[in-house]
Length: 261
Image: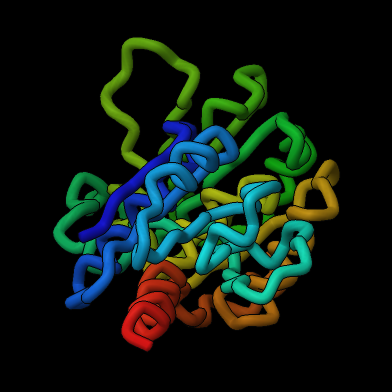
C-alpha cells in the first residue's frame, strides 16, 4: 500500500510521480510519501510500526521519523544518513506521456524548437534582452510558450506564441509543443520546467537569464554535467541528443530495495 500526504502545493506533483513509479513494485511494507512542510506532522502521526516513511523535500524537523529523504541536490541539504539526492524535481513527464501528441503543429516544417519562458520570482526573471538573445540564437521554427510568471508586456516574435496571461484562449498547449519539438530551449529560472523537459526525451538546451538565483544556476550545472541538457551557447553547433532524466523511476527502485531489505 502507498499513502500520499501532501501540502497540495505545486510541488505535490512530485509525490504523485513517485507513487505512480512505486506502484510498479510489489511492496511488502506500507510506504507513506510526504511532500511539503505542512504535511510533515500528519505524515509522522500516520506512520505505524513497519511503515516506510518518505519525505520529498527537507522536512526541517522529525528527521529520525523518516526512512528516506528525497532532496534536490541544487538546494541546501541537512546532515542525515537517509538522504536520496536527486537531480531537479520529480515529475510525471516521459516520452510515453508525449506519445501521440503534437499533431496540431504538423503544419510547421522541421526542425521545430520549443522555447519555454519563465519569469519573475525568487529564481530570477526573464527580460526582453533574454528573449531577444534566445530567438536570435535559434534556427528553425520557434514554438514559444510563456508561463504565469512571464511579463505580459514582453515582445515575442516567433512562429507560434502561447501567451499564458492572455484570457479567453484555448488550453495551454505545453505538452503539444514539447511533443512537436525536435529540441527545447528552457530558461534556467524554472526548476520545474527544467526538470520536466529533461524527462521528455527531447534534446534540451538551458538558457540562463541575466537575473538568475545561484541555486537555479546550480541546478543548470547539475543537469548539464549529468548530460541531461546542454548550455544554450552550444545550440549553434546543431541539435544533439541529451540523456533522459528519470528520477522518479530511480528513486522508486531505491526505495523498493530498502523496503525489501
